[in-house]
Length: 90
Length: 332
Length: 118
Image (cartoon, rainbow over the protein chains, first blue to last red):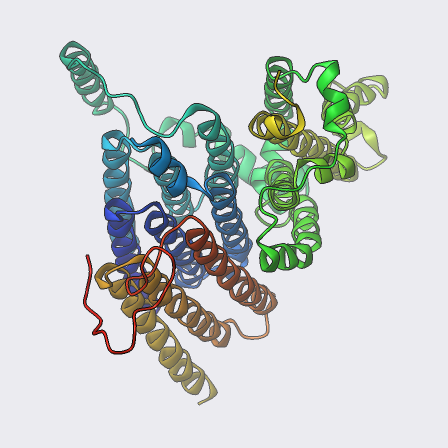
């Protein structure tokens, strides 16, 4: 049961990675990284139960936090990125 | 099952590393390095190294990504294309890599029980940690008690990094006055985000304190707690602006605190010497050696947490100051 | 008996949660542009995460893991939704537009047929 969930989460992480490589605009990549982070949180939680040691859930909380803060950081530093690249060209 | 997860995660790691090498958009490279850190943290977690996974996730995927984004904002987004093909370098790297891989064939198998490292030191720590130190988390007892001197060195390294950044990105006296001006934050339009973060921030800080003091019983400890605390303050800074954050967490106080943490750590060691033991020998701190160890580990981890948190916040403030300087100072 | 019932309930939640996560990832790859992708990915992400976490809660029993899972669930709901809102808003402010709006944000007239513009 946990193995099935873990495998599905790994597949989802792989698909999100493909979008992170491909994504034509910047925001596609940000979205893919956000999804990747959330799935990592779930994968850690499921692996906790898979290994039979549910006292490692602190790590899942920290990952969720770090994922959120990284996304906000990315948005703060590049909120107007598309406009700027349109002005300067490449 | 675990092998399959390891295999998949390692292949993701390889793909991400190749993508990082090939891409020219440095912003995407920074995001992919964040993914790389998360993948390594998952791998560490799968290898049962939970404290390492904790620290790798918080530092690698959190703080490093934010600091690199701040520097990208200053430096520019696209990599300059090289006009030559570094064939000689590639040859040297391949030759060295092959020699190194050939050298590892002589090493014991991964995780084998007959490896020399598992014969003397590790069993002794594992067997005697509960009797001598009395702390359930063996990682904390090794880090803070058995190898406390090394951890003091690590804390000093972090402190030195903070000093280095402060001296390189120094704010001159003229600009200090302008720093006190109230300037609207960059993300002022994101109202929903600001409200949600106002709720979340006390919980993040309390969670950092939980990780700090729970490090004896579960994964955690000073480094992780300091990084989480700093991440919470950095979140506040990003949304509410550097001037608001500087009024709440004065830079002078932060510089003082980063030195205070190291002082606390080394001070505990000196107090042990004064009381008759060796440097950082916590047994003499109290009547009962195990209680002495507990007190020593508590104080030492607190020192580490204080230093790490204040250094991270200081570094982020200095980086961010550079990116928003133009709003405070009218250029001549 | 109780164990089997709990196991079956966890199975149902975990499988449905995984299914939703999978469909969200497929949508992330197949949808044509950013705003539809964010719609697919974030909605299914939140739902799938909630279902998987609730399924794990049934496995945890009355241990310390239960409040931690509840904490992860609440944080996931709060932070995940806020992050997707922030992303959409930032994209809109940068000038990115959905497929059926042109640069000024005007919708096409009702008589005009919606054509797919790359």
